[in-house]
Length: 63
Image 1 (spheres, helix red, strand yellow):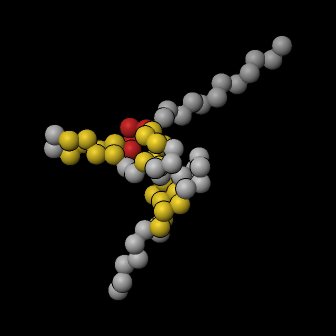
Image 2: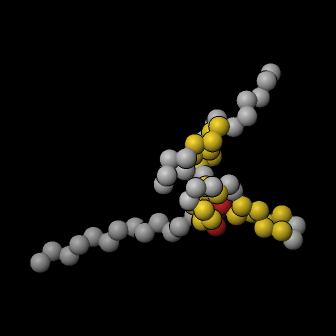
């Protein structure tokens, strides 16, 4: 039999959603419908949840 090629496993980037500022831990927005652990994607003009498709628009900046 032919040996299968090994797939490159990409590690999770959950650590990128958290930031340490001083002595406190800051995290990105979580989905209000799905709860803690489901982060909202940060788009140019909106926040979006890929699991439940919750959409939250960012406030428009006037020039």
